[in-house]
Image (cartoon, rainbow, N blue to C red; front, side):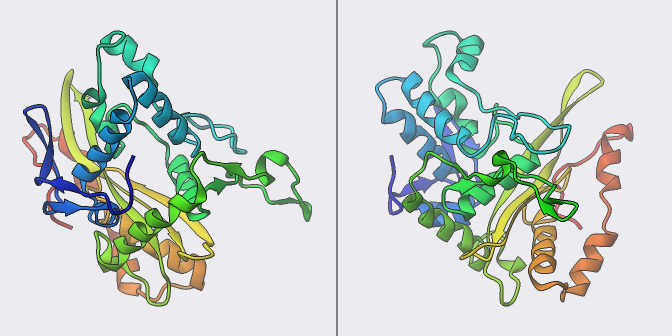
Length: 301
């Protein structure tokens, strides 16, 4: 479908028919590396389209996309040792056939899936597990809490056997490079930890609720996934902050603190730790219930 050097132009967004969808990366020519570290919506949308363009029918393209995405543990229960959870949703062709009718939809109808929006839904643990699969260059272990009982290791095959994705391991290195550059020169360059090479990806999730029966947009959710070290990784995580706005704002800061504490045993950036511990988003949560007009996605701390 693409190679690392394949380029896609960002026009400060991308077009679906005559409708422009926005992008905040600054625009320009993007390849796989810059598309990832600049978090370019147009690059991911263009790549998504190319998947479908490769096949004779939309159904074929959808089957391939769904197969690969689900191999990362998305769209189904992970089988971990907690009594609760949700499967998330990776939509299939039958899903869209019910919505639009058989053979009455194309990739342009579902382009929001390219950036994890649209009909795609995932839980935080699924995002962390997906990140672990990337860190391992193609496999993961089912997440679980119980490691030992009465000092004896828990030997449950579901937790000890590798689950392989459908992606060849060689194709992960360009992705890892792009995620590492998120910290070196991309959307999380202010979140670097001295002595630790981290790979990560910012995320911004649109947030809508029904308010008095009216669909109302609130401040976006802040999402960040990361693993470290880049080589021989020890930790993979996902941080999700409701109404936190863009990914590098709160989720990215918290992720970097968690990684530093886990790998180094202590946090050296005490000012950042204090800021995160004392920060509250109660004013965001109160906005829709204030009875007054309110702004969303404000660049304020």
